[in-house]
Image (cartoon, rainbow, N blue to C red):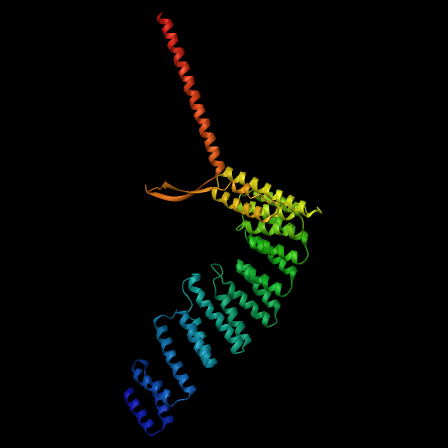
Length: 441
């Protein structure tokens, strides 16, 4: 059995214009010769199909070549799941359900022997693609369900889990119109291995079904699991607001801001303030700003408070001019208060940002006085400082006019105090000298 004999035999049939006989010879030889001893035969078969074959034959040749490449790669590493996925997709494209199923079964048999999530991730994708193939291509719903169940049983959930697996399984049951099975699957998932993505997916499912009581229950469980997640608090409150439950929404915000630890408190506070502002409860909004400033002196909070005062001050007045002036005065008072506070804390860049926002407000409002801000604007100076390694680094600093005035006053007072000390010392020395002269006499 030598490949060159078959090549010569097939070429003879081609010269006799017996193309089907030549094709049969090539296929017969390729099925019986080992791949290591049939490379030349395969190359000649490829050329033959390109010359005399139809579209199906050419695609079959290309598919066979890719199969050989995948098999060779898998001999090197049977846990190369990307190659398994490509191999399975190749068989899916040929439309051969039996061969596709065989590749998937071979692939899922090569499970990772180390319980590390990064090694299992691509392996789980094999199962998910297999289940989708059985559902959408093979149309075998029961077999697809068995694939999901087998995969769920295989994953070591005590060490790690995959929310995508649970959610895809649940949506599969939804497509089969079995809502109870979907809920049982997700309930089992939350009981075994609760995680953010899983809980969010379950909530999204119940929202699609418009089961708002179940959504409330899930949000409560979510917050029991992770009360530091500000996004969850905000989403829960927005749900209640969308349902018209204003008091429940306010109660949720009140509970949320009292939590000892929050991952993004600025998001939560902004949502709470915006909620009260939208409800027209301006006094409560003002109190919320004051509570927030008791915890932080961030310049954006001060600017936001000033903009709030600018938008709501004196809204009950009929005179538009007076209303605008009162609003400007209220915002200006916030800016002045913020400037003093940031000055006490020594925050120069924050003071500059505040002054720029203040200047913009004065320019936009009727009756604004830009000179109030311009007199406070700092000068940008270049300075040097010594680093830990002894080298010098240049940096830009801001010198504020009121800081210079205060510094000048401090220098004057220091000089006066020094002069006073010197005068006291001179007087004491003179007294001592006079006493000594009296003793000598």
